[in-house]
Image (tube, rainbow, N blue to C red; front, top):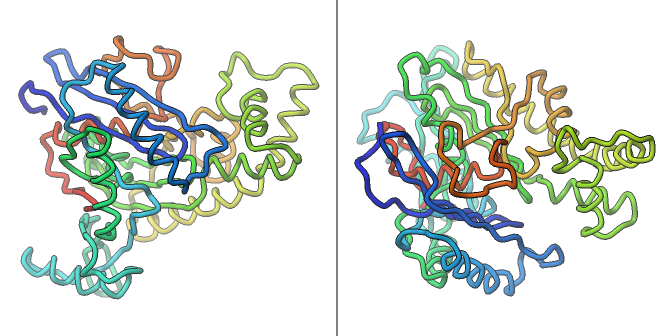
Length: 374
């Protein structure tokens, strides 16, 4: 169920390679996209460069002028590199005792002083540990200085931050709205978002998050492997991956002649080691979830992020995980007629999954407590 009609904040996904801005609105006919805009950073730009922040500020201001966004309130996510995810297991405690226990347990596991950070948590559910029943808690933490720097960046963009979220939480929220019926309680969602620098893995039981992992591998690593193996520049590697159908070519445009197939094979072989490592990491996530939550097994993988356009990546992960892989569509049952999200309004827009989840924050009346990372 949705809140009454009003203006909702813009969802801002400040990615490593691309900025995406999205604003949604609930209507009697369903949710529709009010405005959307994106900006891609130059390939040669260093991700840690101070120039990048200045470029991002100007890009967001330009997107605000070019698109019909309403207001300047925004929900944004901290970069994955600034979010720490840990798991703690607690005995059966009262609500008042849980937060104190989490702070005590998390203090031992975080890579920074817990007093200098922000901590939020998700109850993943009850598990059996030996003869005891424990509550598995997912802890999301970030340094205060990283949160404040992010807020200052948003103000510099002429935006008014109303919430700072965690990317994995926003990712799940983009699909959570399809899981609000009573019969969906046993539905197991397995979402993999392969971004430029990181891969987010989220497993949900119904409308509740049960597992979160951030893996430090992404499409940049795949592209770098191709560039290194073939002795070409990063820019040329990106073009090659696209031209061979590895990155974003549609099925009907797949290579048909021997020369193109040979080039595609070289690109795939060059990135195989990175794909194999990524597949192993995700397989470990699936095994952990299967052991901890017996009886909850996903039947399909929803792949999002820019790499979701890659048929070879999807095929590789399907074999590695022994599950069918589908392109995740956060805009299912959403009116996108007024915007162009991916160059083809008839196809899913999986690279917008995080921005969709950010834009949905506060719009859904659910009991899901996957709050901020700040």
